[in-house]
Every structure is written in structure tokens, then in C-alpha cells.
Length: 144
Image 1 (tube, helix red, strand yellow):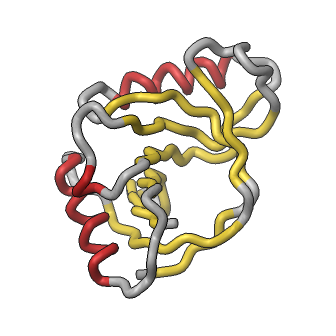
Image 2 (tube, helix red, strand yellow; image 1 turned 45 degrees about the horizontal axis):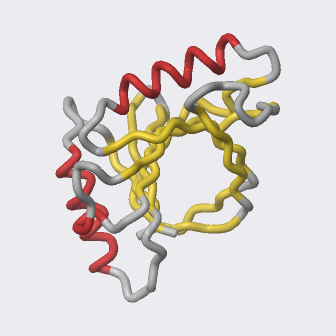
């Protein structure tokens, strides 16, 4: 497991559930960012935030579909979306190259494996980041 630095970050996110399409919510986020005069993507990465360890999640549990942004959004300005400011810190995780398909069960199993392989105590919140590096699509599971 590797240690990663997290800088001060502002997230724009939509709440979703495990049984709903987060791809659709990501498209809605991207459109809102593109059309907003004071907001830009801080990077091309996007994130899924989970609030329980994977083995405790049910299909109705909440997750956040999020992008890191620069700029400011007034409360209620983008219906169904909220912002959240993360302070800098560190998190632990594992990075891997994406395959042809993304299976939720695979992400949950990797998260559980990371927790079990470490002697550290982690918060229940964790995230999966998706990004492109050297032309390859990658993901990073991060435990806080």
C-alpha cells in the first residue's frame, strides 16, 4: 500500500446510491461545470466517495460522484449538487490500470483487501479515483 498526498481541494459532487448510474451523474456534473461561468475542473480525474467499508455497503447506501474544481458555487446555485472543501493530508491506497470493464464488486473486494492487509485503523470513508496517466486509464483506491 502506498501513501499519497492530498492537497486542499474543493469538490463539486452529486449524491447517488450504489444501485443508480453514477456515469449519468458524472455527465450531469461535467455539463454543469462546462456551463458555469466561475467554475473549472481542477483536473481530469473524477472520484467516487463511499461512507462505509465495502463489506458493509448495501445498494441503497449513499455515495458521492465528484470532481475537483476551482472557483466558487453559491449554495443552491446548481440544483442537486453541493460543494465540499477537503483539507490537505495523506491517504493510503493502491493504484492499478483499468481493464475493459468496471465491476463494483471488484472495487469492493480491493478495498476490503487493502483494509485487511494493513495494521492501520482507517476511517469508514474511502474513495476511488479515476484518471489518465501516460495514455492509460487508471484507478486508485484510497483509504483515509
